[in-house]
Every structure is written in structure tokens, then in C-alpha cells.
Image (cartoon, rainbow, N blue to C red; front, side, top):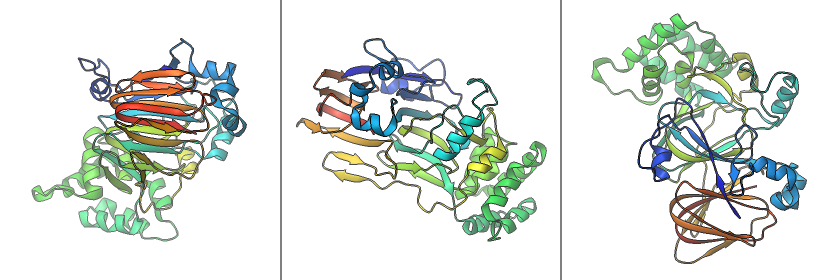
Length: 385
């Protein structure tokens, strides 16, 4: 067991207060702090208390740090990446590839410099992800039923959107054609349509709802971005603290605002479709998208006493939220563990030692270090394979 220092990622959509407040810093951060990474991805590996980057440590001691089962299943790498995610503004509209797509894309781009701005695939791994809200959290997650979306857009009464309504009601074309058409709009045309739709949504002082409300909100940040219109096609999800969404590979999504804990397969492959100043590769995004409607983006939880989990259909990660109280708890977890405290004061221990954690602090427990023991009083997230 060793303390683990995460790596702050300063993206423009991040918050200057959420991570700083959690960690007990007296002042807001100078730059937006969007994510704090706890893991071994080579883009931004966390640092162990002994000074080693976690990816280097695993490369030199894979068997003891990962445990035999994880090593046999995933090879000499940590299969998950844990993050604090703090969104003060909407993230980019994005999706992530499945394993086959990621491997193919990575091999196709292997001769391109890893930091090249026009590169899509920085590793060969898929990136399904689970986000658990720490505060009220809003997100766009997966496509809505296209017929319901068509009804809402038609109600706006905007002539420029009549073609979109017809497309959404066409069973043969549907969502694929609608997304392709919207992402192909020029900026000037897009600005005019967004302006007309936003005015229609707020006519007579009424409060916009559902997809129209999303359009009005996104238009304030991106008045000429096609992603604003695509956002109307997605499920608008509001989470309370402790609720979660699971995004399988290929599902279009954008987090809007809130603070949460996110875990994913260890990848940084992102295909963007808008709402960003970063590179947008529409053809590649369309190639990886899953155009099936997602009926319920929220992930069902399983509660067992003080422990909550969110079952997912992949074996790269499991996330436990533990309400640590008077009685010590023990977890017989086979494989590497990262423990992240999000409230109170918690001590985590294994056969190799113990670490006291304050909010926003993390520790790494080796896969061969025996049962994980937890004591104190607070809230703890445990990430494992």
C-alpha cells in the first residue's frame, strides 16, 4: 500500500473550485481543473509515494503489483483508469471505440507521432466508462427514441428543422442520416438554425424543456456548432449524488455540468463531434457510433450494507462506493486496487502497510498484497479489475 498522487488535467471546461475544495485547498485553482487522473495510462501516470510513476513501477514489477490473475488477463498493464471529473461547462460531444475499432485505429496510425494533433487513437484499448455523481450532475447520454425527438423538434415550429423531423421518422434512415446531415452543416447555416430554434424554444417567455432546453443551454457556449443540434437527439440525464451512468463504447455523450468520480477502461481514445475547439473527425466518429436508442442511461446500483456497486458488462473495472463507519471493513479483492477518499478521514491497509487518506487523496494497493482493510469514517471509492 502506497499513497498515489493524481495528475490534474487543465481542460477549458473544468472547474476552478470543485477539486480544490474537495482537497481542502484554501483558494480556487488558477486554471480550470477538469480531471484528476489516478492510474497508469502513459499519457499522465500517477506517482507512487516512493517517487515512481505507476506505469514504470508496473512495467518493472508486473506480477506483484497486478497479481497473477490480472496479469494473465490483461498483460503487464493496469486495465482501468480512475478520475475525479469536474465539469463547469459542457464537454465535447464524443464517443469512444470498441476494442476491435481501437486496435485497428491504433495500428493504422502507429507511424504518426503520438502527440500529433490529427491523431485519433493514442492506444489500442476500448473505453467504456462509468460516472458516479458526487454533486447534482447533468449529462447527455446516448440517443433518445428518434420518434419522440421528432415530436419535440416539430413542436418548435422551425421550418429549417422540418427535414430533420422527416429524417428522424424514417425507419430506414433515422438517426444515422440525421446525425450525418447535422454534422455536415456549415457554420453560418448552423448559426441561423440554432438562433431560430432557440428563439422558438423561449417564445412568449416560456421555459424550454427536454431537447429544446439543451439547445438553449449549449447555444450560449457554441452558437454556430452542429453539436448543439445533435445534442437535441440525446437523452438529457440528471443525476443525484450516488447515482451513475454507464456509457458503453460507441455511445454518443457529453457531460454538461457537475462533479463526479469516473472509471473507465485504461484508454484515452476520444472521437469528437462538436462542442469543442479540439479536432473533430466526423467520418471516424460516424464509423464508431452505435445508432441504437438508449432507453435508460442510468446504471442500476447494487447495495450491500455500506457498499454500493454498479454492475457493468465488462471485466476491465469494478467500482465500489463505501460508507466507512465505526466498524472496520475487509475486502478480498483479487487484483490491483486504487482507493480514493471523497469525504471524511479513512485509513486503507493491506499486508504491506497502511495509508491515511483525506478527501481527494488516493492510494494504490498491489494485487499480491492480500485483503484490503478499511477503517475510519467517511466515503471511499475502491477501483479494481
